[in-house]
Image 1 (cartoon, rainbow, N blue to C red):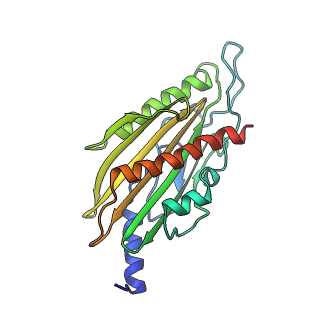
Image 2 (image 1 turned 90 degrees about the vertical axis):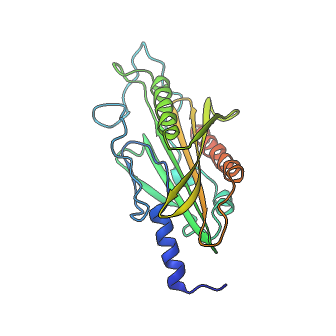
Length: 235
């Protein structure tokens, strides 16, 4: 059934407000005010909020010296496949107080009554005397992120093979504003970088909620690209 433009606009607005992204990187906040994405309060790698610094002779140097552009961490082809009728294929970049250390990007779209949200967040650490090696900090952050994602009511978690140095996929059904979302968060660590890929979908009105297996499969595809983009940036 054909819907009026105002009706479609209301659906998009409600979807953006009810989306359940997991942007858990310190110092970033989405520029999409409807999504209300924020990362304030996440632990920082140093008192100043920056993770830059010279490696101590007793600490191993960071494996990766730079982060890819978050909005290019997932290919446009994959974005369009996972987010039909995406509002902005280039993505909405999260604001970051330190782009060299952390960043994020999100996409969303509504195709008929089917809504999809995709976001990626990255955090990089350097070896800092008195704090720890770059990799040890990334390991700690990875563990924190997994714990936070698993804390969602009804969430199930599973270790994910062949993705970075370690990875976990967390699946949950979340109800927001009487709409049910199927949410999948893939948390990975590659060297001294933590990668968080969140993908969720909902079927509004009479449409069906997407299946968990479908969302998880697509989330893993995007997560693999995001992890690979870190190595590509530092090649």
